[in-house]
Length: 244
Ligand SMILES: [Zn+2]
Image (cartoon, rainbow, N blue to C red; front, side, top):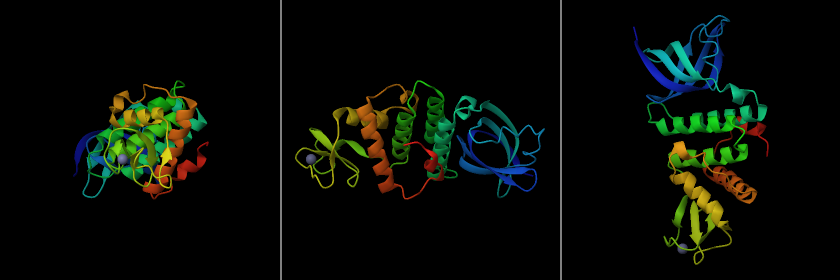
């Protein structure tokens, strides 16, 4: 017999298995990303029916078998219902889930990513935040947590902290006025640099506490698109549904 443990986490995806079961991927505080089976979760009267849908966040009681986990009970604290009532927010939310699934690993410490995902889905549920901004913040913070973020604080060539006006995707960070090379860098607004510095260094809890001009948002969006294309060699299926 396996041992029962309670894991706090969020459902990243769910797949039907057999007639009534589901296989789900959970991002948990305690075990990183795990795969678990939810027996009978597709029966209409099952307590696990809604609890094992994507976005469900809460406590999952699982039995640890030799090669897999089995969900026996779930106490859901947030279904993110406001999010799933808005189609654009839903698509964006699925993109975040897929992004986290791609970046996270089993038995790895994914606490920061779980926090980021939770806060980002909350921001997405709120009309106060522009979705394009939530997306850029999520992407930049996610690659930063994963150790693949850009260096926005010093020149990639001479390490100077002064006159940083150019961003180079290839170099993975800023270039100063002296080291600028038009072929590999683009001039960016100081406000865009400050915004990116803030996202990189802020705690996840304080991430969604600012707003930016349309100009900064446009630049930020372009930079993140180019950055991900260069460093993340993966096509996210859900990204195809996102509005430009
Ligand atoms: Zn330099």
